[in-house]
Length: 375
Image (cartoon, rainbow, N blue to C red; front, side, top):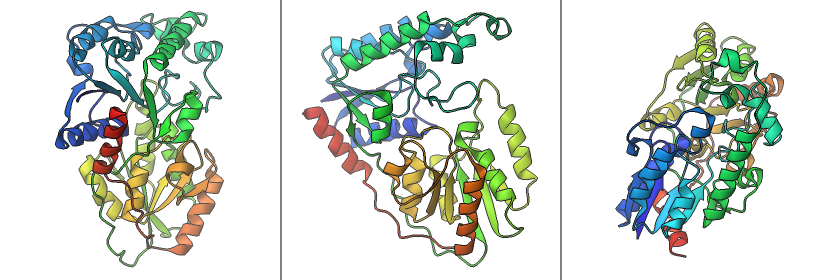
């Protein structure tokens, strides 16, 4: 069996880490597994909004790679082309797509609008208003904001997504939530642990240790956690905030300001992006992981790892979190007050962890996927 995995990246975010680990394990189990991504496309890439989902250079490069491939497993097509699945099917391959977020139907990927609010669902008019400056690219954004919304490019993108659905043999969804929001039938295949996660050591005496581990962008909610933590009595707990500061809406100003405020807050320590290998060390120095997201999370890898380490988890009740982490304590998303109340209860409980939650191994997960490929 020859398998070609397609992803927008092989390191960094959760979907990229999963795709890379999946390929490594497929090869370990004797499968001929190759990769296709942006680095495989020579020359100049398409520009403008249309180029974000339909790139002739990508499609030409992919067509050369797909010959003789039995299975194409798509993880993410951001920066590539929504035409890839149809080209794979035309070449005789079976196409499998794992739904990691909402990018197939939402150009922003997170169903968060330009004002940072959760979107009820994509429509041509709603998306045209949300993406107005991008639809006029490469017109300067200062000019594009004064131009009327354009629905035609949105409809073109919708048609491309419809083509993905027609070409796909089967969809895999880490949570049922993401499949329902995208309106597709999918087999729920939970994400595994990408590597063994040992149980955290016995916690020494001291105040509760709270951990935020994620990107410093508004949809991840680090500002909400900092607001809630800042109102706790002095010395009641410590907060460790770790993660990258990627651009959000084209700027890192928001993250820079929040980091400065965090570093000036007593009891808070701040770290930058950590390698996947270093995540376990961060988990082992914490009692409580907090996931204060405002967007509809699918199945964050860090949740599974935290539970496997035995950490308590406090998370926003959004998206697939309730499905993938039924052991977590859930609070209303986007509000500081319920988050603070939950933190107060956790402070009263003090240090300590839960019984580690057994998760499926990567080898077991890949065996499941190989079975689906054969079927």
